[in-house]
Image (spheres, rainbow, N blue to C red):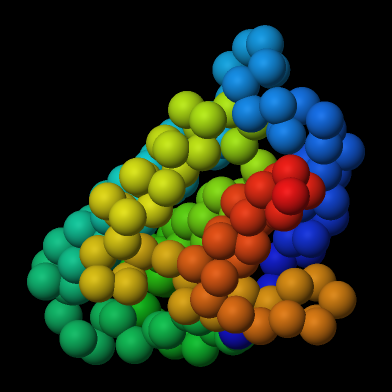
Length: 165
């Protein structure tokens, strides 16, 4: 389960502009969700780049120089490992964390225009590669909710519409 500080706080901050959100198109200026989409695209591309480099290093280094293993929970570092391997392990974790943060932003920043809403929905569908693109479980900071990224997305987009009824 991934917990992100400010996960709900960012969402609550976007609600403050409720009247402009409900207008869905009356907002002047760019929709903030468009920047969030681009940030997620960049984070996802960064993960792919880091993983490619890490795989190349795995093929280059002998097994006895790559025993270290780093996860979001701990580090098991072998002092005799190649320093590039250790750095690569840490880089992979950092890249995945940045990708998860960017995905969390996509479900906390509410689109302010119809075009933004459509762009977000189209991106969510297009970027979902067999369920591997998005964090499978997100936990709200209050610990009250653990659900898929998609569930948080639908809830975030649906709120402006429930206020119209």
